[in-house]
Structure formats: C-alpha cells, structure tokens
Amino acid sequence: MAGRELGAGAWSYFGDPRAISHDGHTFTGWVSTTGHIWVARLTKGGTLTKHLLFRDIGVDDHNNPSLVFRPDGRIVVFFSPHSGHDLPPPGIPSLMRYRISQHPRSIEGWGPVHTLPNVPGELGYTYPNPIQQRGKLWLFWRGGGWMPTFSYTENGQDWVPARELVRSGTGFRPYAKYVGDGDRRIHGIFSNHHVMNHPNSLFYVRYEGDDLYAMGGRRIASLATVPVPIAELDAIYRYSDAGGRAWPHDIALTAGGRPRVVYTRRLGGPGGDDTFWYAYHNGERWVSRKIVEAGRGRPSFTSGGASLDHADPRIVYLSRTIGRWNQVEVWFTPDDGRSWQSRQLTHDTTHYSIRPVKPRGLIGASRILFARGDETTIGFTDYRTRIQALDF
Image (cartoon, rainbow, N blue to C red):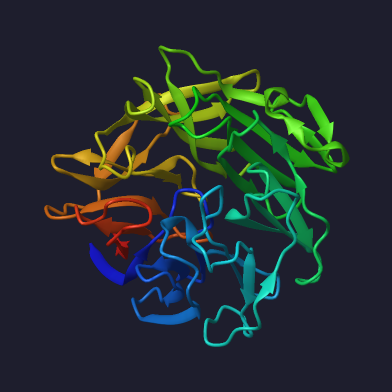
C-alpha cells in the first residue's frame, strides 16, 4: 500500500463531497491548520499539485471545502466558516462562498469569489453539499435558522431564493447527508439534532419531479410547500433506549438507484459508545444491520467516521479504535449487511486515522483519503491533523 501526505489540515463529517475523481485523478480540498482553503490534484500515478484558494476563513475543521464537477468539467468549490450563536470569530463574515475553475478538471486557474443568498436567521452557513443534476447545480447547507437549506442555479451565478427543506425542534440543528443520481432524483438523510443533545432518530426523503417522497412511494409534500416537519419524513430508524441515538454518516446509490445508508447509534447517552450500522429498504420497510463497534474514539470525537463507496455501496470505509488509536478499515457485504468481510488499511502506531472517504467518481481503483492526527489535537478549532491519501 502506498500513502501520501497532501497537506496540514482537516475536514468535518458533513461537508461533502470532500474528494472527487475523473479518469483516476483525484481532486480534493481541506481547511489548513492556519485557517486557509486549499485544493489539490493527485494524479492516479501519485503526482501532487496544490493551490491556495482562499485565505483566513478561520481555524475550524467544519470549514472544509466541498467540490463538484460542472457538466463542462470545470470544478466548483464551496466553502464557508462554521457558523452559529458564537461562531465564526469576530472579523470573519458568515458567507457561503464559491469559486469555479477556469479550465476543465484543472486547479491551475480560478474565477472570482461568488456568494450565495441565505434564508432568514442569524446562524449563518455551514456544511456545503453540492449536487449537479442535469443543467441544475444544487447546493444544500445548514442555513440561517440552523435547518437543512437549499438553492440551485442554472448558470453558475444566479441562484433561486434559498429555502429550508426540513424543520426540526426549536433551537435544534439537524445533521444531513445527500446524494443525487445526476438526473431526476436527490436523496437525503437527517437526524433531529446533534447526537450530544438529543435522542435522535434517522429520517429519509427523496426529491423527484418537484415532490418529496418516502422510500416506499408515499408522497410527503410538494417542494413548493417546504419546509417539511422532520416527523413527517420516512423513518429509517426510530430512537429507543435499547437502540441508541442516531447520527448520519453517508448515503449512496446502487446501480439501480436504490439508497444505501451508513450511520452510527450511540448507546449510554451523550457521551456513550458508537456502533456503525448499515441500512437499506427491502421494498416494504427500512432494515438496519450492525457492522461493528466504533470503539472509544478520542476527546474531540467518539466515532472516527464512515463513508460509502459511491461506485459500489456494498463497501464501507470506516474508522474505529484498534488498540490505542483509530484505524481505517474497509468492510464489504455481499448480502445487504447480513455478513461482512473486513480489512484493516492503516496500521499507524503513533497517530489516529479518521473520517475516511473514497473520491466520488473513482471506479476500478482503490484510493481513500483521511485525516491523520495525534493527542495534540484538542478539538475542532485546535487541530494538528494532516490529510492523507492511501492507494491499496
């Protein structure tokens, strides 16, 4: 296995895609340990080039950029400071910014910085999730009211008015993941709130033809009538004391367009232990199957994170505690989670390896990216991690 350090920086669980691929080459980005936005290109042969895209967005691992290809091959990179009641720090305006590359599949030249509108509220922008669907570029994020929010553009500059998609309890902040099929459908999963603050369930919704649907075909609402109360969505998992608190990690689609979900459940209250779960819909109901315990984690996280292989969502990349440190493993199920085969990919005895992702669009190759750190990382605004790539 061949590893490569890309740069000093970090990324969160919820801004995605963190890495994309074309013809075996990887394009990715991170927020540096000094609070700058970097993008990078790593060829399939291992040649690395980097570009400083934006300065002084703040030292916070939530500020990582999310990348997407336009139909013409140019790259759009979205980024914002972590925003809420006490963030970002003074002097850093809460804006969702984006830049578009000047050339297809290249990081060598970039257009000007653009910004997006938001919904009303004082809680800013966090967690960009761009999705290119035919001629529309959609963006989902956590908006000014702390709820899942969206807009789209057809020309890359003019955005429709932002709207909230889902509403949870007053003062809550749902956590979300999204995936599109590139054509007509966008799928999303949502928690009620932060896993530390609420006994979360996990919910699903599908956008298609200007309406919102449950997995079984039940029409939930028209897009024109959003936001939808979260309790009206399709429940993947409902909280119970025995089952634990849900926390979404990823959603991907099979070749037939069926969603697969990886998430964690936390037992024992806010500071309890996490377990990884795999979920799918069997045509009648959602089924969840246990993968493996996540382990004790580190002070700034409990679970090391998980993501699906978007080219083959039978494959899960996850980070769990093995010995002293979190290590990255690949898990494979041939039968919708009834059985699993696993392989440990990192064997670092001095650092932890967390939040692994495979570049979206990478087919026929084995490459993951993750963050590597040690005990000098105190929390999400005080980190000493480095982004790594591993070919295996």
